[in-house]
Length: 489
Image (cartoon, rainbow, N blue to C red; front, side, top):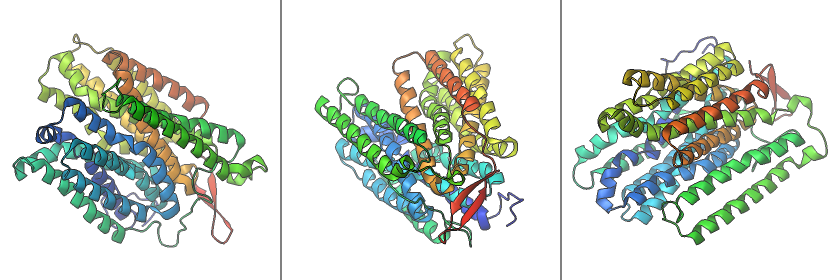
């Protein structure tokens, strides 16, 4: 297939890989969020309390943060074909087990484990980057992420009707179990249908595994700092389940979790040093260097864009209902508009990034995100409903486009570590969701929107003064020791 054309409607060559991979991501998100639209039936079936229902929602996202880091390392080492197939298979088995759970404790454990399937996103980022050249990479990654991400909405739309069709008190079990079966079957289809790279291309792997390679002492310090929020977010989730939160974990258990997280961070820091100890004795040749500040800024952008998306989608229907005195159904439809446009807004962000530059696009969308949330913070009952919806949709366009623009740039930093870089940025998206939802629990919705706007403004400054536009080529070493140069523009 010619590199000059982007043929979305073909099912051969790289287009075939794109369609097979976005659908793998789609299924992973259906499985990850299949319980959310059925929580009413689940609560009634098992006699759960409101606190237990809230706990299931929190537990569902907890493991996704470390999982995206771990899966990023695994995909760089073993390739996306094997890792995506394994993730779908294991996720399908855990999903089926969740559908048969008889107690809250069983459900909580299995829901916690299912958070691992939320790392599927990272795998496809590496797969798509292997098949598409830089000039089409943003659009391809945007389609992959945008269409796959719609899996959560598809679950909300279809699973209640499916459970009703099965009928009876166990209808929800059959609906959820069926998604697990689909994931299992598709894991086999995916493994038999894809290849890690086009024929004749080399799949570059990290020289060492266990932590990301950096190329300077300053980058090592920044790497240490950027890992702290990943563990802090997990500590916040534990705090939410503590006696001062939902009161589902004892203080002793929560303190034990804090101690484990601190120990894990210390061990991770030690592994980071082991992997990168050579940089303290001899400089890395210029041709093999990359700037970790690029990774750090992309992490922060995704924390604001995807993190705010997670938080806003969770609270927007109730905000519309309370502010404009709407029915729950109408509020749900209007609030859902924020998520629905991901189908075209995220690919659009990638396409614009391909055509007009990575940094320029990120600057533009972050200006839009800042202004969009600023306007949403000004919303009150005096606003015409049509204007409120227009502002919400406009803000969502920039948020989703920003998500697409981030991952239009991620694969252009260092090819052999694309999975790890994508994993870290993806994890920061979840960190943002935890952070902003925690903020929302303490402040009014309008203040919540203003805080996101202020965060977006700070990130905009980081883009302007820290982020560099990818240019020229990056170097990777072939198995025979020769250097291959890969275009990034």
